[in-house]
Image (tube, rainbow, N blue to C red; front, side):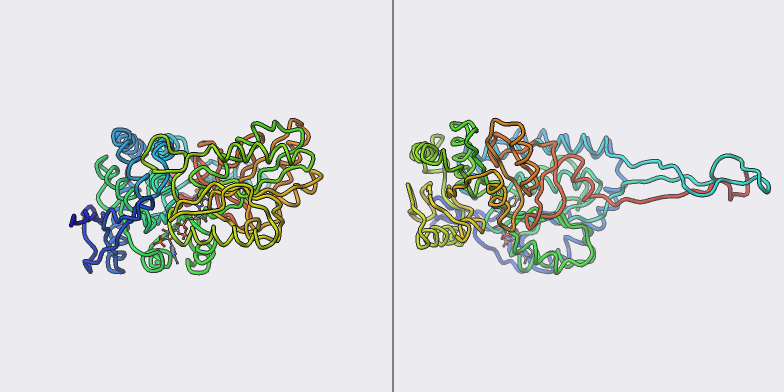
Length: 493
Ligand code: NAP
């Protein structure tokens, strides 16, 4: 029997086992085989990580921004030299195809340079004072105020990054790179399904030369390790990406801390009758089947104007039948398995609920182990689970509408508001749809799975709090301080 390779976690600059010696297994979702063992960290390990990060946060805060930027650039070079290894690790533990995994590494590797650039240009302000002017003698105004006001952006201290399994390198690396750029120390708690990519990121930051304790990783269950981080008074900010349910739990347990919450989505694509049909079909397929539908930005609902319904559906079914589902490590595979059994059960539940309530499965609908066929479901109505909830599977549910106003109401008829898309050739309709749909991002004539690295990313409604990327995330990773000076109340004028 081949024994599994055991990974260690990085705490205070040391690669260690859990203080209890306990481990858990990481399973390849495509084969069902365990691939690694990882430390099951204890509360003692979390405390050590927090203590180390607190110490390192003072060093990080004192590092000139130019030095932080240089370290990030160095980390970016190392990550580039290891990109195929990271992509293979992502594909193995997450189940996304090797081509999708390479795309993830491309996104992840952008953050080092972006964070380095951002910290060099991120700045506070000098404000005019509204205080009374200074009187030199009674009734004689000197024409000026004695007050000067500076607004500065300071590191918070220790930032906890808690990340999901569907983007195991890119998502934790947003919190890590920008958190460090802002002068904080960071503790990462990666998903228990995909902890290996997070450990590879820690290796990269360590090799780049960040101070000991500036980057720590603790692996183990969300309910224990994650919970301890959330509740700790020594953590100043939490960057959490995951489900709405856990996000809501964090808002109840975290107390007063900065919270950046990137939560689930249920993105609609609205296809108007004046939209480009071919592009709308392609965007719907990419939106529904990319990463087997396991993206927060997935097209979870496809709203089609009745007059083009039949033509749209025919083309989408044709396109769906061309998706190659198979071994994620094979270059020709378009779609891999679902990541885990609880996720797969939720997809089954949504498909059978839709069927029971009168929807029609036009193609797909079955699964073998974690491999779920790409599936088109027609005649979906707002009372169905597949419409109301985040399905997180390769499902394209179609609902028809007659007017644009009805489409906007349908798009907004769920508690989510992450990304949305609309296809139309009319500028007027494009604006009205973009303004009417409540979501953090609305893409016109693009899929829901499209985002730009320099634009703010995040959700409205239950899809989250705050915005990631570029200068937008720096707001959540820094404290704003107002400093006032009175230059007249001094002895040596
Ligand atoms: P999840 O179950 O909410 O878990 C996310 C992370 O939280 C994991 O590291 C998990 O650890 C940890 N966790 C679980 N319970 C916790 C608790 N009580 N306290 C603290 N931490 C806890 O989400 P997931 O299934 O990994 O990811 C899929 C979800 O993420 C989907 O809803 C998806 O839409 C969302 N997502 C959102 C975005 C975005 O940018 N908006 C991006 C990607 C994914 P364990 O793994 O140990 O349980």
